[in-house]
Length: 153
Image 1: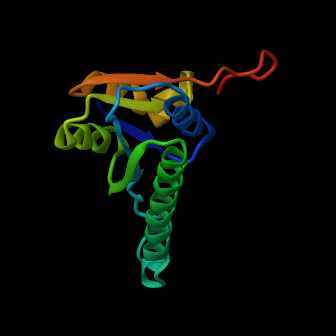
Image 2: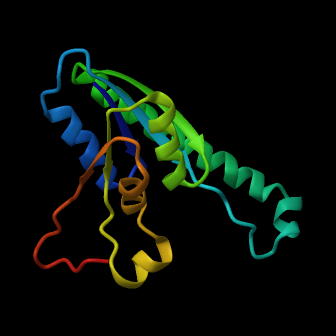
Image 3: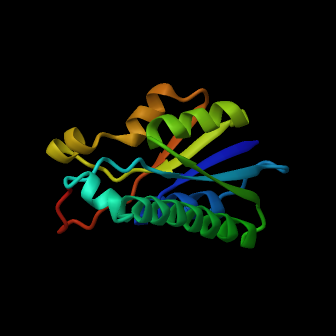
């Protein structure tokens, strides 16, 4: 079985890593950990920031974070006895996750959900919802249950 595990370094994706690591899977299962460095929009001050290299620095920081997040998650899985490798991509996570699943012929995509509702969901979109709608394989969305006294975003 080939599991594509999408991570972003949030507590929600950490729970997805934990979910995969704790469950029994068929012998020979391999896990590919994917982190996507999202695109950086043009900054408000545009070329002034770019001229100073700020945009380049921000892009590199985003790439480094994606590499670190995927590497740490893959190491957690290897420590639990899984065959795991990591990959990073740049772009919109919604399409990059689906494209990686198609190219790697994944049997299952696992990802965490931030659980955005209302205005945040409208503004930020739902990566999980988009992946479920467009994936070439089964998708498991891992949710983190909030404490009773904590409001949802």
